[in-house]
Length: 175
Image (tube, rainbow, N blue to C red; front, top):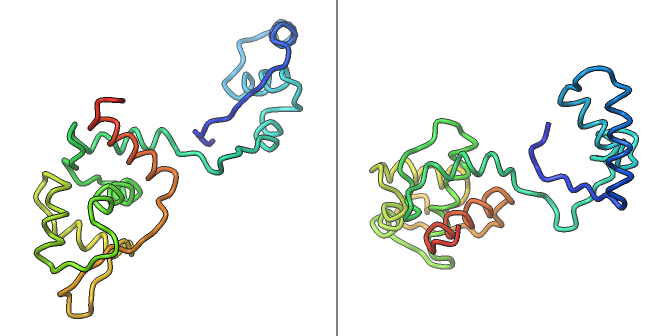
């Protein structure tokens, strides 16, 4: 089941509470997690939890997976530098966005220069791994001879944007 935010608006909280109480008393046992989700959805006037999820449209598009972002942010120190390379591929991909964000756009760099940007973004000492991964993920392009590199402009996904914001918040002391 998705861990994204699911807004639930209730027009009349008193009627919601009464409906939920009635459903719980007729149930006769402690509801499971899924049963409780269905009871909450029914008390809010939906057929069940699945119909509630199907009817919800988020105006701002996709929502970040807060669980995934929270797990990935642990790989960064208070200064926003990556301390270790995650074991999970989908966490690695997310970490690369932070390194990518340190590389200036619309410029070409030699290998030594690009390595400096990458080294500034981590503390575990494997800039070659990160450089290769950035190229493999098509976040960084290099000439066939490997002499020049440039950042490929892409729109970060919601998880990447949330991670970048979380790290920026740590750096300013806001989060």
